[in-house]
Image 1 (cartoon, rainbow, N blue to C red):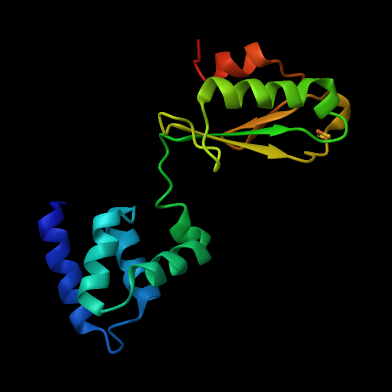
Image 2 (cartoon, protein in one colour; image 1 turned 60 degrees about the vertical axis):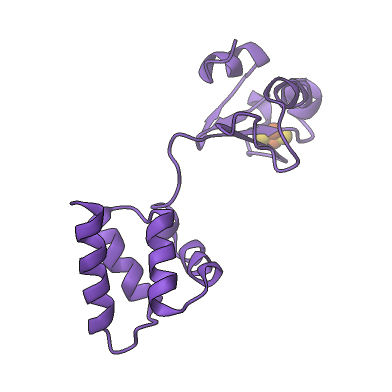
Length: 154
Ligand code: FES
């Protein structure tokens, strides 16, 4: 569906609501039609309803069914266990090296904005450490080289 066409439909949908600030109903409508909640659509809703963009964002973050629809799937999430077992077994070194290679900022976002790096205290798989989670999947017995390969880093 064309974005313009969709925004017209959304406009009419909001006009038809008894409570025009019912952001949950509005976001449900968006997800049903687009299977995503793009930023510009969030802005459109804010302009149309008078709701603050931050309040729309809060609603999105509150409901997993909405939250998953704004996640940018091109961004990789890497969490390195630096807990009691994994840390000394190499997890801390993996984390430090990755942070350096990716030039992450204080929020763990890489310089190119494509990877988000974080630390975890324990994945509950201590004997198999170092453990690293990549895009939600946990990999055991990891090394820096293995992580780099999985992320296609040189
Ligand atoms: S310390 Fe890493 S999984 Fe437990």
